[in-house]
Image (cartoon, rainbow, N blue to C red; front, top):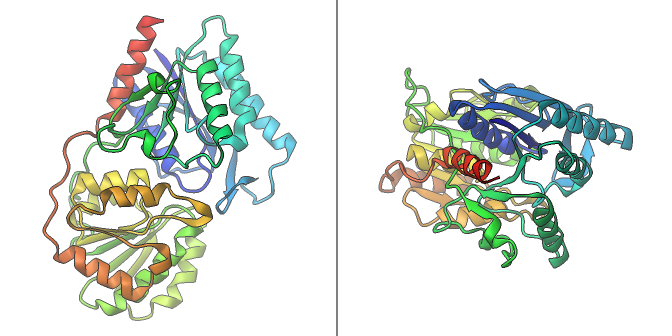
Amino acid sequence: MKVMIVVTHLLGTGHLSRALTLGRAFVQDGHETLVVSGGMPAPQLDSSGMDLLGLPPLRSDGTDFTRLLTQAGEVADAAYLQARETALVAALQSFAPDVLITELFPFGRRSLAAEFGATLEAAQKMPRRPIVLGSIRDILAPPSKPSKAERTEDVVCRHYDGVLVHSDQSIVPLDISWPVSERLRPRLFYTGFVAPRPPVPHPEAAGKGEILVSAGGGSVGQPIFRAAIEAARKMPNRRWRLLVGGQDAATRIEFLKPLVGDAPVTLEPVRPDFRQMLPHAAASVSMCGYNTALDILQSGTAAVFIPFDDGNEVEQSLRGQSLSDLSAIEVLTSQNLDGDSLARAVDKVIQAAPRPASQQGFDGAARSVEIAKTLMERA
């Protein structure tokens, strides 16, 4: 079976990371897999075993997802967007997948509707139409108008054989964040959560006893890092390790260095062994994206979440609320974030009763493969 996954991450790298986890599951089951990425390069992510094709890259202008920028920071013009659309359709026609998966679209990425739409139309016209599936996380950005939900349903009903919902319906049903109509409901396939295998403790126990601070791959994480440096001054017996990501990580690290002074803080770029460090850490401080939340649940690490809520974003806040009753987890809003509040929250989760690592419900990638194969057999 040939599988093509199309994904564009515009702010952090979470969407691409989840798509690659899904791709690895198809590879492990013996299927030829092509991931087409339309976001900024993210060489730190594992794409082994699959082909990775990069479109002319895009990123959002901060939290403005309607203003799309090139890698050089220029506004993407019509010719740039057309080049992406042409390359995407050509990739589809050349690869000729048996299964086509679009990550987030049509429930999001409406600013890229032209290239996704052209690809879906091209898929319909292929000699052998592929099975077409959507791939969405547990919680979506709710539609601002009923008409947006209706347009999404129209696209699903016209082009898609199903939508893979990477959640456990008994824990986080899609209805929490998206209006699920009777027309849409039968097309939803709950897969469980999509996560890599549980992290294996670091062979060198890197991060042991430390507070690990991660904040995505963009400048939106700077307030968390600044608060962490102030919090570290109030907890001099703990070392804090700030892992800075994104294309501009070196510049942001240089900006933060003068703020550190004599605080017990290590500043460094994001590390590929971050997940292995989590089981050794005293606590984690991070936003509350899908992949990060699953890392915390799988590792059992005490955690303080600061959900990303700029630009009327509610996804991470809803996820944080769903986790806030668990032991050794605290949620801070960005409005209440400062050195004092963060130090108190970190101390609280460290002192709380340990939370065992979660073992069940993280096989969503393998389950997605089985769903795709079943739909192929029925076609």
